[in-house]
Structure formats: structure tokens, C-alpha cells
Image (cartoon, rainbow, N blue to C red; front, side):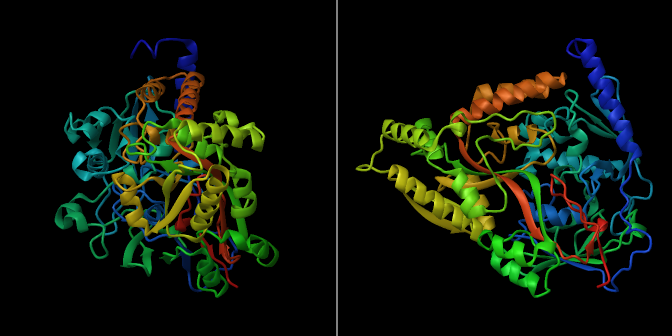
Length: 547
């Protein structure tokens, strides 16, 4: 036990409380079956709008929300989530935590099986976790596993994947060793980067192991078909350990990027669930389809990123701050998005447990004061109406993103004289260009928290994070996050994360625009739906009611 862990009675109390919560969680279970007496539809098929085309179904390479929706049905981690978002047992039926808070021992269900009937073992989780952090995999999410012992050394190539702090004690017992107590670990263990993989099928099929006919999965569903730009279809996995309590037989995910088209398909009876809704039709939807409209808080931030690796935004914080100040977030949320989104003057959204978010100083300024300061900074950065900034706003193809880009470009033009052109790209191309940082200047982005802790937002701006698309690099910021990751005292840890958030915001690698809400149509005949701040929903918890 380190000297830090022996530091105080408060520290010991924190670890004891953490251990108690772990044991409590292990005793809980999600009940997926519909209530007794429910009259069910004869056909149990769920048709979901899913936004953009899924990037991949390889859980260790996927990074977009559309892929995540499908993979929650196909795979199951050590933990899972109840409909309300609570952490519940997944493949692990129970677990215990060591006294110092750094070693978890998971007992796996003996009836957990892959979709081909093979048993799911602790070795499958070791294989998956090692693959997730191995440099050869090329995961953009590998940094999320940094709390695990030696993960960062493996990610950097300094140590082999076998050095990762995970091991199978036997076929049904998995041990995970951490660098320090990590209060959000159980929430992290249902993320796709931690999913197990069927090693034999991965070795047999290589990069194509996640395609139809090849994919062996361990979730409530198995992959039936994937027609690109048409649909992804999954069907019940008869070998799933809780198949007896699963009601939906098939789920069809439709990639529909145009929200107006998606709404039309819902009204035509072709969808039971929409991914999003067109902002400009909010009033009509509320008046005419209000019984099916569901709006809920979501742990996410919509923002514009600046490419800090190339001119004009490299080494030019005054310009970045000026552009951020010139965006009228109140107009955007009140006139453009219209569904209750919250104007964002910070990075971490409200609702994170036990955390006070940082706020940009100009968030409370009157509009004229904010614009006057933006013009002053714009001039100090070397620009004027005679010498305007010429830049490009890049966004992925979607009606709402286009409307926001048009509005932001108009604000920059009116308030500063900026000449901003717009460029839309297909989702996969857009993601790749953001990663490469060669052609991007200003780009649309959004980050949805992977677990209920501010670190899920903080880590995105680490210098070495695979999804740090602005290319933000600040050694002081990295040091604060490293210190927070090793701090046991909960209040002190939150204080360090708050300090880091304020530091990053002051550097303006991004311009936060609003905090998300989910807004979708849910057909009244779909039972079992429950809103949660993570917006994580598992088809195994749903059922179709008789009309």
C-alpha cells in the first residue's frame, strides 16, 4: 500500500465506501422482462433510426455513437446498465475490491456464452483488453483504459500487451489491477473498449471478424446482416445467458442522416424510434405528436474545434477566443436548436455527480461587452475588416449541423468580418480528416460522456489522446490530469479536474456551443423505454405492445 493510501482516515473511509458500493452493485440485477399481464404484439421487431452509417462493429476501433448503439446489443462487458442508467452486473455476476482499492476480482457467469455456443471465459476478457491497448490495433479509445496498471506503457509501445494489469485466475475469475483507486471503473467496464472478443474467430478472419457471417458476439443479439447505407439487422442470440427474459426478437438499425426524412419515416410507420429530430419542426412536433416526443438531459457537449497544429489557429489563442466570444449561444439554442439545449460556456456538462463545472469568464457578460472584447482580440490577432480571416467550417452531413454552421458563419461575418465557407462531409470521411489534422480548420464536434465522471471529458484533451482532434498540447494540463488520476481523496480529485478544465478553457482549443439533450420520437407501443443521462439503451429491455 502506498504512502498516499495511508495518508488519512478520510482516505480510508473513501475506499471503504467505494468497496461497499461495489458489493451493493454486485447484488443488483436488471430485470428485462415486461411486467406480468402485459399484452404483447405478435411481432417483436424494433426499428430504430441510427443517425450516420456505423463506422465499424469492431468494438476496439469504433468511436461514433451510431456504432455504439448497435454494439450494446451485440456485446456485453463485465458490467451492464439498468434502463435508468444504474450500473448492474453483466458477464460478471459479482466482484470484490481489495482493501487498498486497486484490485478488482470478478466472478464470471458460468452460463455466459458466445453466439456460437462457446463459453465466455476470463481469457476472452484478457484477450480483448490486451487487444484494445495494443498499438497495432490502432484504437482511438485506448487511453480510456489508462487507470489499468501498465496500460499507458503498453499504449506507447514501451511494454508488451501481456504487461497489462489483467489476468485470468481461472476460466471464470478475472483480476484487474489499477494504478490507483478509480471510482468510475465499474461504469467504464461496459464501454466497448473493454468488451471481450472471441479470439478464435478474430484470428481466423482478421480485420473482417466483425462482418456478417463472421462476427461471434456475446450480447443479447447476434449480427444477421449489414447492408451499407441501408440497415444493420440483429437477431436474438439464443445462447445469451438471459435470453429467457429477452422479448424483442429482431432489431433493425437504419442509417438516416437527414432528420426530416427520419421524421417522415416515423410518421409513415417505418420507424419505432428516431435518433434525432429536425430543429425547425419542434413547434409542430410538440403540438401534433407530443405524446410520442421524448426530451431528456444528456451528458454531452456540442462544440467547434480549432486545428491547433496549423495556421491560422496554431499559437493564436487570441483569435480562438475572439471567435468563441462572437458566437451567440443564446440565439443558437433559442432560435436554431430549439429543443431545450443549454448554452455552453464550459466543457463538462451539468449533471456530473459531485462536480462543479468551470465556466468561461465571458459567459455572464452582456452581449455588447462580449462583442467589443472579441473585436479587440481579433485585431490584436492580426485581422480586421480590411484583412479578414478566411477560414472553413467543416461538418458531417446532417441538417441540424448545417443550420448551426450557417448561423455561426453569419455571426462571425456580422460581428468580426470573418469570411467562413462551409464544407460538409460523409461521416467516415469527416472523422478521418479530423484525426489527420491536415485539411481541417474549424470543425463541428460533439462529445458524449462514456461514464458519469468529469474525467470522461477531461481526458479527451490529453496531448496523447487518440480523439484529441484539435491537437491541444499543454504539459501543465496533462500533469493535472495525471495527478487527478492518482488522487484518492474524492474532493481533492474533483478540485484538480476543475482546475484542469479552467486551464483548458482559457486556452480555447474549442468553442463550446451547447450542452445536449436527447430529442426523439418513441412510438407509444414500445414498452420498457426509460430516459437516462447517458442515453444508453439496450434492446433486450424493450418490448412491443399490442396495438
